[in-house]
Length: 382
Image (cartoon, rainbow, N blue to C red; front, side, top):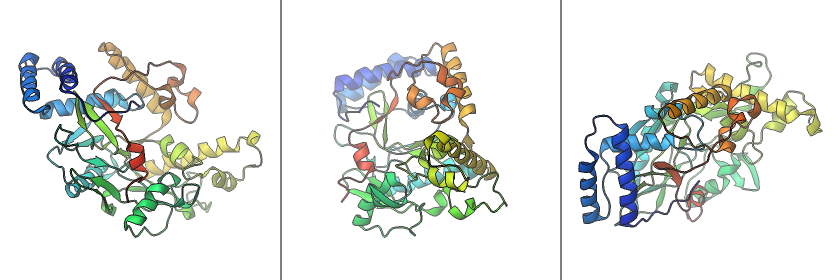
């Protein structure tokens, strides 16, 4: 993704603002004459170097940013995004509390709702708040990045930094919830324990093992219901909202083919292969492929059994083509990153594989601001 520079000149802000305001008025019936709104924006910029979006502009901008997200296959429902306007909040305590409330509302008893919470923007006088955590929900990884013995290896650096900062750690399971790290305006980053009632978790079981004593339940596998990205910046019309956590719902492969399967995450494929009695001595037996499919079957089965929203990669691929067709009928081009749109398993069995896409960046957008990955790993936290 394009790296965002957090400071812009007034001329740059005006150019982006004019483009967005005209887009908003084209796509929002009854919004009035854009010239009146543009005059007001120009006056605000001249006085303060920035301007404030109306609530309606914020909602449409956040939704269009999802529509423009080249790496997201699930954009068919972009116009249903729930926008929580919390632009008045700059303090880390209040921001953390609203992040946890975001999770509760988005979880919705298992019927996951696409949601974004937008906090204070950058201004010429002060940068806005930041959420250091990569997602609102993350599991700890105990040990160093090269030798993680328990948990999610991706989060080992952040876990180590939090322990040095005073977090006492969890129970030592592979699925201990990490605290959320928030940096308010004019404040140092602080960590906040994640309340258990804010996170719905799904126990992972295999459909062929229920009641069959295959031991899947003994593994204690689980995953959380809401994938809420927290360290990307929402950019609308030249205004940068550096803290704007957002979520859709999971596609099964995100959990079963990446989070639980990647060698630098939970690396479960060898254990699944052995549990299934597969020949793991040679890659030519395709034991990894078979284990991957069964792990993904387990994820989908478990979410369905728990009545928690999740999509499978075949259905989501068809939905993406529907999205393309709808946008084309409206005269809008759709950008996409092929390497992200094509699912990580059975790619050629899905219709999105057999197409090419233009990976072009347009605004509004969700972008990585400078240092986001370093912050997600807890660098310079202590």
